[in-house]
Image (tube, rainbow, N blue to C red; front, side, top):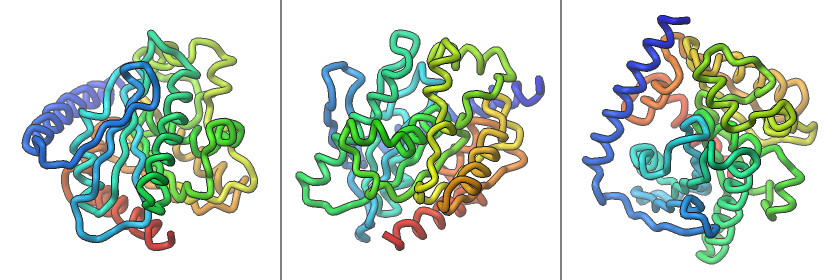
Length: 283
């Protein structure tokens, strides 16, 4: 595990450097609009229009990771480039960060951001559905948006328009004990009590009528969020619901380096493209 942690630190650093270089090369080539959904400076979303001539039936709603305590959508411009080149309008919400803000503030923000996205879609008369994508902490928040029916009603989210959920290295079962001090630090800053962890645990919201397709990708050598999070989440989806559920475990990947799929062709890159396009063709 110590070797995996070291490898993860190195691959994360290299990813950050690569992402910054890619974003610098993109410069202002992506068509971007910024919308606020609240009064806090973190309560905004970035709207990227498609770069392709083909019109997709869905919009990508991508929630960034960062241990719930760092990160912003601007850093993930390279991911917006990937989705928009496939023809998807891509929305990236910002949200308030720990430790200044704890659960449920992050959850509230992504629900508000999705509500704002629906309003924009209606105002522009786009008639689009939505695929939720989340990386790391963003996958946990995305799973709550997908599964928490009570908050969907409260924030006027029409779940009939939610057509897919893609999780990358997602902490999808917060009842699991953390394996590293780093992971416990992140989780404690977000959900410091057992009660909050239970309420923030996506697995607790799976319901029998759920039927949205789910695809989880995870690195077998992930020292921060063990692969069992995705494995068990997919098992529960298959046992408790009729939803189509797909799982891919990549044996040589850690935590952050799975995000490399957005840079170059490879097994994960191809799997994500195929799944997205299959979902889009169905809707």
